[in-house]
Image 1 (cartoon, rainbow, N blue to C red):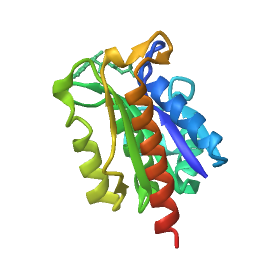
Image 2: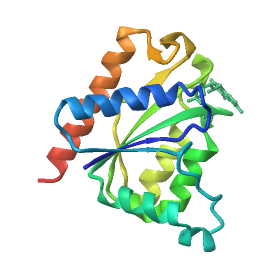
Image 3: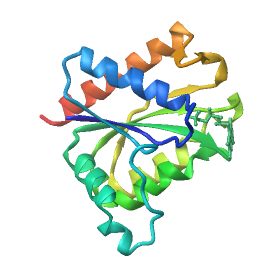
Image 4: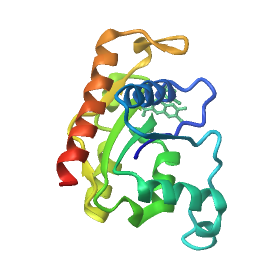
Length: 173
Ligand SMILES: Cc1cc2nc3c(=O)[nH]c(=O)nc-3n(C[C@H](O)[C@H](O)[C@H](O)COP(=O)(O)O)c2cc1C
């Protein structure tokens, strides 16, 4: 099972559009795919204690554990992925061990293109997560309303999805 996680809490999120497109691609390739939108699954802030008993945390933790490959869609805030994405990793920790993970990002400008690296590096160090070397970074021009407006961005999402399937299949043998 593949898991697509949308971590933006914004009603008009652009990274959610990327996530939805990626999930549709996985399904069109006959891959089993679970979808979680953190805007619809409120999570507590990680406190290193009682938060782990929260039913939503336990639900998402079991999905992460069961997934063979995961795509994280996230906003870029303050030159990093948003705190919602980081909080999700804090809440689910070791469940990311050896998972294959790709990133889809929405940013306001070009200069935060390395924003994914802080979280990605921590996941590699902490959990030996396999980070896909291809990730999708977009700015506002890539979208029109609720749709991706640039064919190049659609192609990059498809390439990320194909790489997710390829790595997951190869590394599970
Ligand atoms: C608090 C905040 C901080 C932001 N920081 C950055 C930033 O450092 N670099 C950048 O390119 N865009 C930044 N942006 C713009 C967002 O990345 C942009 O609005 C993006 O579309 C958010 O993702 P979403 O639409 O999926 O919610 C910031 C936006 C907010 C609200």
